[in-house]
Length: 108
Image (cartoon, rainbow, N blue to C red; front, side):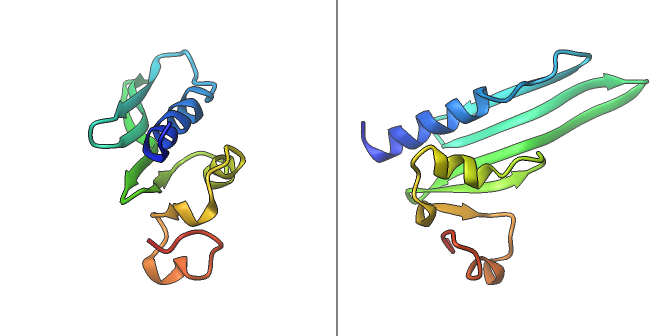
């Protein structure tokens, strides 16, 4: 398996490992392997209020995994490292480009 296919597979495994609630708010795993966008979103109604939002958003760009948004309590980068993805192939995209230099992960 080449690196890109390996990353796609590991991201799917990561998303599917979430214990998504089964209530009136639907959690959806969205995978776009053609453009390499991966998300967990929530959609529905609760107490007559519309719920919609992205919980987790990961992209693959230029051979690196970009964590674009992490609305979970989990350290997604650490989970990816435990799946044998090198830290220099993970970008914490929700941090400013300036601050990324101070992490142990890729700058871009």
